Image 1 (tube, rainbow, N blue to C red):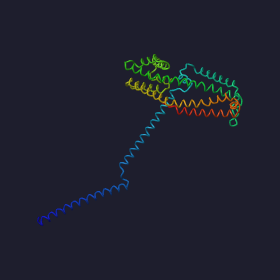
Image 2: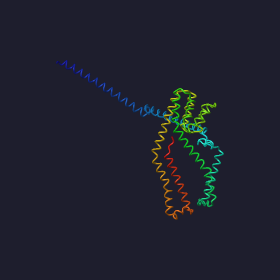
Image 3: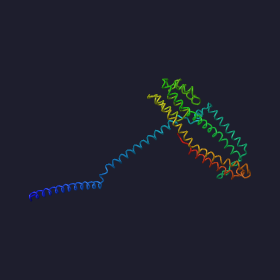
Image 4: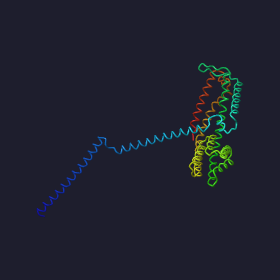
Length: 347
C-alpha cells in the first residue's frame, strides 16, 4: 500500500468520524431542547393535558351522579305522595285493609267497650296510683282507671287492626305469585285479561280471591281497568300489588307483551319472598334470644314472688317499688324496640 492510499483512507476515516460527531451533537441538542421545553411548560403550568382531561371527566361524572341522585330523590318523593294520596290513613281504610266488614261506628263502639273493660279491670285490681314524679302525685285510683280506659279505647283496637292487616298482607303476598302464574298461562293460551282475572277470583282462596272478585266486578260495572286497579291498591297497599298495578297500567296505555311482563313480575315477587324467608331464617336466632331476654325478668320475678312474697311485695306496696317497676318497664320497652329494629328489614 502506497502513501497515497494511506492518506486517502485516513481522510475517509476522519470524514466518517466527523459525520458521527455532528450527528451526535445534533441529537443531543434536540433532546436537550425538548427536555428544556418540557421543563418550561411544566413551570408555566401549560402541561398536564391528560390530567386536565381526567379531572374534567371526573367532574362531569360527579355532576351526572348528583343529577341522578336528585332525580331519584324527586321520583321517590313523588311516589310517596302518590301512595299517601291513594292509600287511606283513616279508620275506614284501616278496617278495609284488615278485611273486616264492620262500619266505623261499630269500631268506635268496640273501642269504647274495650276501654270500659280495661278501666273496670284496673278498678277491680285495687291499684292505688303511681309514684310521685317531679312533684306530680297520682295516688288516687281514678287516675289509674282513666289511663287504663284511654289505653283500652285508643290503643288496643288500633293494635288489633294493625295485627289483622299484617296477617292478611302476609297471606296475600304468599298467594299473589301463584295468581300471576295463572294469569300468564291464561294470556298465553289466548284468553282476555278480564277472563284471567275472573279465573283467579274464582279459584284463589281468601283473601286474594275476594279482592280479585271485587276487581272484576268493578270492571264489569263499567269502571276503567286503571281505576279498578287503583281501588285494589287502595284496599291492599302492598309493594307486590303496586308492581302489578303499574305493569297493567303501562300495558293498557302503551301495549306490549303482557305475558312476558307478568312472568318477570312473578319471578321478582318469588325472589323477594325467598329473600324475605332467608332473612327470617338468619334472624331467627336473634329473635329467640330477644324473646328469652324479654321473658327472663318476668320469669325470675314470678319465681321470687313465689319463694319470697314478702321480699317482692315491696315493689307493689311502696312508691319506691312503683318507681323501679316503671323504670324497668321503660328500659325493657326501649331494649325490645331496638332489637326489633335491628332484626327487621324493609323489602
